[in-house]
Length: 336
Ligand SMILES: NC(=O)c1ccc[n+]([C@@H]2O[C@H](COP(=O)([O-])OP(=O)(O)OC[C@H]3O[C@@H](n4cnc5c(N)ncnc54)[C@H](OP(=O)(O)O)[C@@H]3O)[C@@H](O)[C@H]2O)c1
Image 1: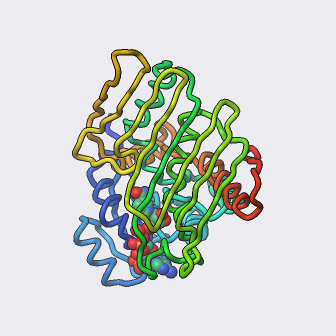
Image 2 (image 1 turned 120 degrees about the vertical axis):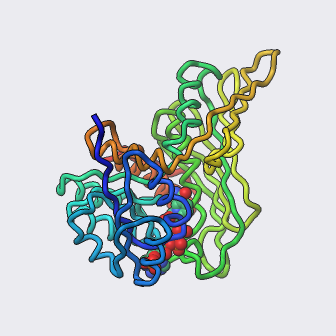
Image 3 (image 1 turned 45 degrees about the horizontal axis):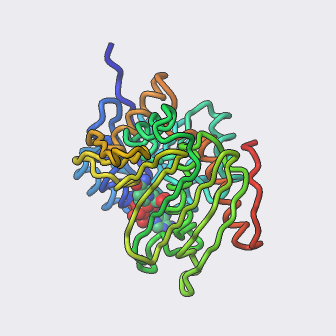
């Protein structure tokens, strides 16, 4: 039986939406982007004609009032994630919101409660949660390939952006931890299959923009430790390594693998025979994310990165920011 694709609307002609997410969702079997809104009518029309989108709106409210739109993709700047996602759920739309879903865990909880009240689905657009290289990694750990997981280490960085970029604006929720530090945190929680109990961080702020330009953190889990670093003013690089009791795994492009190339996972199982390179089929994580969310809307499966997981991730980030102020380990409470 064929399933009718979900009709999506997009709030804002954001770079990530135009370059990656909309074209990828248009390739999906279960998703169809039918409307886009921009504060500029011209930008909305240009995006609509370039990306085969039926309708263009010059205001976000007009898009939310479109009765044909079932679900909203929200790629607004971070400080607008929760306000506009709440307006969307109150308009009866399901919401896929860009990461980080909120500026704090308490904001994310407000969104969860609003979605529950409206009876719609909400999830965080952590596209890596839909990439097969990570489900494969999780399976390897579950199958004991590297022995019990003990240590996760990750890094994500890019060069300094101009002052108008959303990442350079402290009042927009810019900075490296919210923008990219969130990725190794998500992976560590997923690979351990558990939430950390405490966190400690060191933060170095950009003297001009005041956003965190370097953040390094440690997360303590019941059964291990994660370390990560992120930078918004240094050489671009991304890496994740997982260390088990017997072996380790290393990922070349853990967060933004190319959709047209196979991914390589290096597995060293600690034996004398050495290192094996495992190739994972090329996949478009944005297409998979859209289709998984659409399937959940049609009643098949769960949203790929749930609101409860988003709240848990924000609790870790809250604790890291607190720790950078206090200079101490900060406890992380369970998701209320
Ligand atoms: N998952 C991923 O791979 C990925 C990658 C990059 C970014 N992101 C996330 O996506 C979001 C957007 O990032 P981006 O780099 O695409 O940003 P961007 O190009 O600056 O887009 C943000 C959009 O928000 C709208 N907007 C509404 N109010 C605004 C305001 N006061 N100031 C600036 N823009 C405003 C604008 O659309 P209109 O003017 O058209 O209304 C703008 O185009 C961020 O949350 C970021 O973390 C995710």
